[in-house]
Image (tube, rainbow, N blue to C red):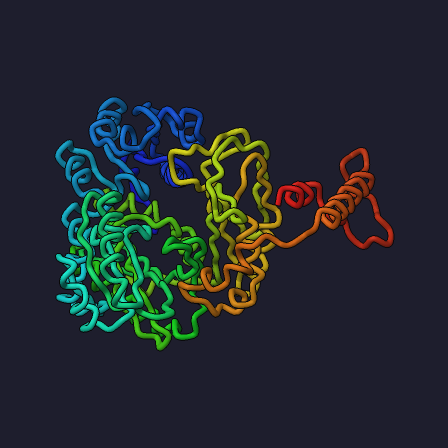
Length: 511
């Protein structure tokens, strides 16, 4: 999967934060110059510092900066960039923007606008998939509230109401009782109109206790398409993913089942002449049956765990495909090894119902060591702005087995130190020690079912807490006394180890 000649001299990254930084790293490895765009709020952001060039595109609100087609295209013209990588979010699945790029003679590193349009509407995508014999959840488009009862009776309660143009959990309502249908419909429609400018809603049969399993695909413009196995994204809060892993620990998602799902995902991509990196998402029932959910026509947030288990760079593959190159390999060449887990670290307080916690980062010490990858768009002294998604980083680990991967993630989270803001690190630590997660026995309702254990801070009285901190401080001083003038640890006799580190102390006092 080696590169040929440099496919583009200069690529503009139409995004911000960790994904912009991650794309720029691959561009640099490929010998391609990168251009950043930034709003007023991101003037000192890491992606701006990482880029070879940077162009200001307006005020902090994304609708006045990152979402303005004309400003992005003007930045290309100003810098001479001949291609745009959209990352995820913002304009990454905007067919009108992809078409505007094509009309301006700029390569959009992503699928053709027609594929985006085919998969961008859930109702249109369902029709395409059914035509391609891809299994879909039974459902119906709802144009009027008067149709709700009859549709629900035909499908059987419970049902899920979904925004046709939606994503990220917006415009979704699970309904168990017929009496609640109309109110849920109006709420879903209102939320859909506000979030997507389209209030179209459809109804699906609700799959009870499902796993959310997705298949990564790569397709070139020469008819070649492969899948890169699965990611289990079932750990969700309000329909938004927070932890992902590959392979899935679900017993029914065995090699034969994943091969079957992979073949279906490839068929789905070919049904819309897809090119680039995309993800076909499925719901899997407790019996191993699976149904098409949607296709994301972009790079996924959780793509690093696929990279860790396959050894492939998905951004590099995106760039190669956009430049017209063939994949150069078939399905038999795509293999995977070991197990990977990703935790999305947000500037949120999990002990206060995940209240946003934007602001400056005073101290930042990210975990390192064997098998640890931290994709971040922040640095010590930078600020997490209130205008955008509050992601601090994506903490990923790889290990030969799932048991070791869970242990490694637990260790990495314990090393993660952030002060100045609250983060979701304590929540992730609770999950990594929770018996159901450790056993791999969870579904999309896992967080809701275990709220008391996962979202309630440990009860520690003020006296006990003060005692714990005092003990940690005393141990920290003992650690310092054990360090010689050259920075080499002295023998600590019967203690048998270095004790708690000062950085762990910081984490303890913070959480």
